Structures are given as structure tokens and as C-alpha cells.
Length: 114
Length: 111
Image 1 (cartoon, helix red, strand yellow):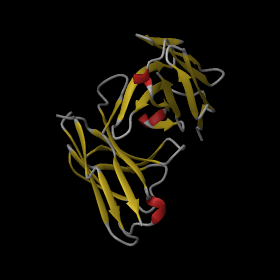
Image 2 (cartoon, each protein chain N blue to C red):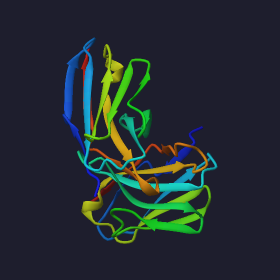
Image 3 (cartoon, rainbow over the protein chains, first blue to last red):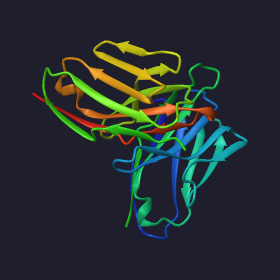
């Protein structure tokens, strides 16, 4: 079984809809991250969480919110989706007790906003 | 603000040829640099991680070098195979465990 899973894997929605992307991990890591990837732009950090009570904005947090329901779960919400949020979204985890603090990525969620 | 650039954006080579992928970054205050492989429908797989104090790392046919002072890293893949076809991303890690990614190089190895 995969250590970092994302649901759904693909989603098509309409402008204005609320969308939630979910991430679960079995690695026991405290740190979790959400990134988006646009063609040719690499991955950009949306939000990150160093533990259940610690949530931080990343480079491009506008239009997004997150919830860290438990150590193993980190959800990303789009309150009112817009077409320029069409992208590939990745969740990642890491363990600060390890050096280097390598990030492990989920398979991604492809989101299309019409 | 750290910026990471990868050139070329796409590369096509015949099987057996060596691959050379370039990555440059603007701020040399990094902890490490990683090379990732991305396959369609799958997540990112870490290939090599070079600590800021290191000059290179090797794993099988892969060799990555780091010149922190000039802000450059190069990934070499020897004797390329069709299975090496993928997108390769480099990322630098700085304070706060944040990764800054380049745009990637899409590689096609033709049989």
C-alpha cells in the first residue's frame, strides 16, 4: 500500500463550487504539505503543517484553506473554485527527526475547473 | 526570493546516449538540492540529494554535481534507456524545510 494517498485522483468541477482534496499518510510523519503544479512551473507550496496545531501559509495560499484533522490527514479546500485553479495538486510528508528531512509525495490529484 | 531554473525544458535523445540536465538557483544559502523524477499519474520520486557541503552524489547510472557558489547543479544519466523517459525536477531546500522547485526537464529516450 502507498504511504501517501490522495483522493480523488481526478476531479472535474464548475466555477464557484466548493472542493475538498484529501491526503492521508501511514508514514507517521508530523509534517505535511500541499503543492500545486502548473505546466512548466514546477511545484509551488500552498500550505504546510508541522504538526496538528501548526498551519502555515505557503507561497500561493490565496483562494485555498486547509484542515489538519489528525497527524495522518491533511485536507485542502477550494472555497469557490475558479478556472485558474486547474492544476495538478500534490500532498507530501516529512519527518523532522530525520536528516535530511526528505519529503515524500503522493500520486497527485488532477483538478479541472470549468 | 529563491528562483530555480531548469534548462532545457525538453530533451529527446536516442537510446544509449548520455543525458545532461541542468539546474540553476539564485540564492546559494541552501541546505541541500534534490533531483526528482516524475512519471505521469504518479508522484515524485527522489533520485539524489546533495547536501550543501557536498560536491556530488552518485547512484547507479545517475550522477549529480553541485556548485553552490555558482548556483548550479547538473544531473548526468549515463547510457540512457527508454525507461528513463520522464520529467526530471530539481528542488533546493532552505530554511523552514521549504522546497523551491524548478520547472522541470521533460526527457524522451527513443529506442
